[in-house]
Image 1 (cartoon, one colour):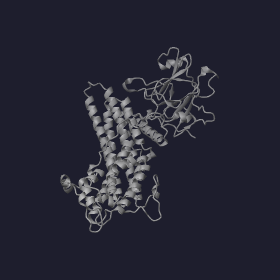
Image 2 (image 1 turned 90 degrees about the vertical axis):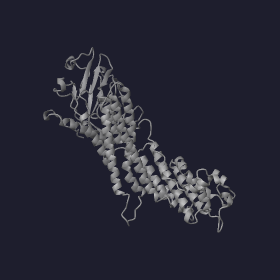
Image 3 (image 1 turned 60 degrees about the vertical axis):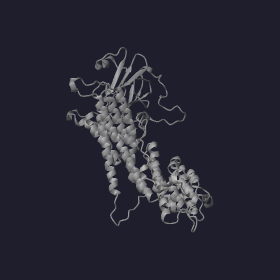
Image 4 (image 1 turned 60 degrees about the horizontal axis):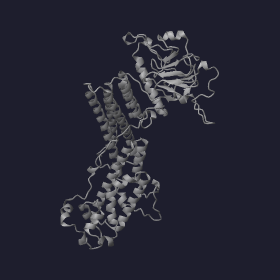
Amino acid sequence: MLSGERKEGGSPRFGKLHLPVGLWINSPRKQLAKLGRRWPSAASHVFGRGGNSSARGGSPAPYVDTFLNAPDILPRHCTVRAGPEPPAMVRPARGAPVTHNGCLLLREAELHPGDLLGLGEHFLFMYKDPRAGGSGPARPPWLPTRPGATPPGPGWAFSCQPVLRFRPREEEALLGEIVRAAAAGAGDLPPLGPATLLALCVQHSSRELELGHLPRLLGRLARLIKEAVWEKIKEIGDRQPENHPEGVPEVPLTPEAVSVELRPLMLWMANTTELLSFVQEKVLEMEKEADQEDPQLCNDLELCDEAMALLDEVIMCTFQQSVYYLTKTLYSTLPALLDSNPFTAGAELPGPGAELAAMPPGLRPTLGVFQAALELTSQCELHPDLVSQTFGYLFFFSNASLLNSLMERGQGRPFYQWSRAVQIRTNLDLVLDWLQGAGLGDIATEFFRKLSIAVNLLCVPRTSLLKASWSSLRTDHPTLTPAQLHHLLSHYQLGPGRGPPPAWDPPPAERDAVDTGDIFESFSSHPPLILPLGSSRLRLTGPVTDDALHRELRRLRHLLWDLEQQELPANHRHGPPVATPP
């Protein structure tokens, strides 16, 4: 027999269940007659929500033995069948959320005494075989076997499964509600929660709705996300205008402020990236399953491509806006790397892995931006490939900005001298060491290479530099263009009245490159954004263990339940699922 438990909310509660507590699985012959079918030497029992007798097309409503009233229970949800001899068998209906001892049940399985059977997120049963008498197992199979372990309780096997079932006419309301809640930051969802919920909608469409429905769902989903992101970008732009009123100084964004502003965009970037990977998988499955001779297939695939292009656009735009505001914040902090003196009186230089507070004051603002960006990408669970590219762009900007400032400083006043170069070199080494401790050392070394080599040139002792020739300097500093190398050498401070030695003159073959070349780095030569390839990181199998995601799934299922009930005549509507008192 089955002992029942009713669950409402985040944890199971014992209370009344609207079914017989002592229900025999091997039903008598009269019970079989009600099913309208024959089971040779076996008995079956059907659990479900049932239906109205006035079903579409005049077909009879599905018969069930035990009625369960909840949003996620199907008309025929689950069948338990017992033969003359144990074990009994349990079979879920297609698409029905059923758990067997805490694991999602997808096909027929054996049912043994003591097993826990979860139907949806509201009902939990323990199976007892009356034929076994008192010889059943003393210990249910779902209890831990480790001596002294604390039993997990019935709720362990009752975890909400990640399933969202809906009819096509409810799709617009469901997708709109998911995107609206994500844009509002409601519900304290896990970082990738919105993508998980939307992927469940895509999964339901690809598995259970007609083949041509998926392209339409993807188009609607992509447009909703794009509209939400564009609205968020506009809000940030209104708070951080590009042009300030004349006479009003612009206050630079702090790392804390830029984190708050960019968190919604970074979350959309992370969610859209994972959702796009998931959608690509489903579109490939659709293409494999479809009849290649179907004249509608090309149109369906074209609609899918358009939807994926919109998701691409969202990722590109959120990335662009994120690095824009981060570099805007960096712009005011970077000059201190050229101007500040790390050798303050009585202070020791911090070693690798030092905390931000231990760094020299002139470096803390710049490192504070990097730290804020690192924490933000981690909190939003941004794909590792996009994390690398975000910092690649920040380091590209920092290198170009600092190198251009270095070139500009030497034009108007004495700046290129050994003592100042040592300070800059030390500041740069401290920054690179800190980034190495943060796990960004390889990316930083790659993108700061040109600035590093320029500073290395200025750090060469004067006596050694005077012995060098143009050709040897070009060989030792290959990333500098002829114009940049000549600029640094021609403005190097050798002493009062001393000019560059003849050995530093470029040969005729490179004179044109020196005279016409630009000494400044271009900000337009940044690396292109490459979207991650591979499978999505979304977890759509197994119990939902995050409480906030569990609550949101329940809320959305109740929304679907309400929409379904509103279409029924008043006398056919079921009330909302009954909450069991504590």
